[in-house]
Length: 271
Image (tube, rainbow, N blue to C red; front, side, top):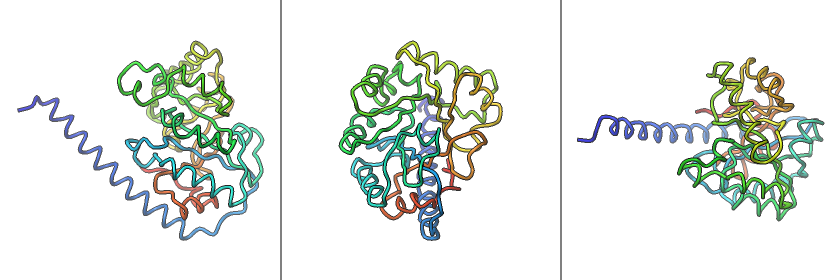
């Protein structure tokens, strides 16, 4: 018989897989239902999209295929959008027909699949880095996350990539003590400075939703030197944050077009 620890790991993996399948099914139903009922909203400012991976299927609902990603860009152009840096929307609001692309986690597929597509269209983009993952201290991060050299090259080779922080370890800030918040926020900036020579002023909230960013985290981020904090969603995000719209695997032509119309501006990902 396997040791008890191994049995518990197997149970945990099975529960995690089951939960992921439930989340995916629920997301599919919710987003299609919202797309059906959406008539669009009058809008005065730009929109920032949040992706995660492009062709890393283990990311589940947060992964889109390269073909799907390219199709999203084409649909946005057909709808009359133009692409601008996320910082432009964050700082100035942007116009209603302006759209920005961001990626959370700095996964390898962003470089291998995302960057070439974005370069084809001349689109600027932003990557929010989990600094502890960029250190690549274990097999998982070495295989799946971009290292500092790769991140440096992305920002320097004319690919249009800006870099921001996504914490040190990707915790839920809604569950952290203030001292841990400071460690995650300040530690990430310190690591950026050590590896890339600058301290980022933009931060994307891990998990990104209203419950993941309490008032204490807002205070800690300001004290750490962050000027812009991104969260989800347009109508439900915590005070003082900049809205982003999460893009998911279930977003094909119909649902992505609804997303651009604002169908998911009150929707938060279930996990």
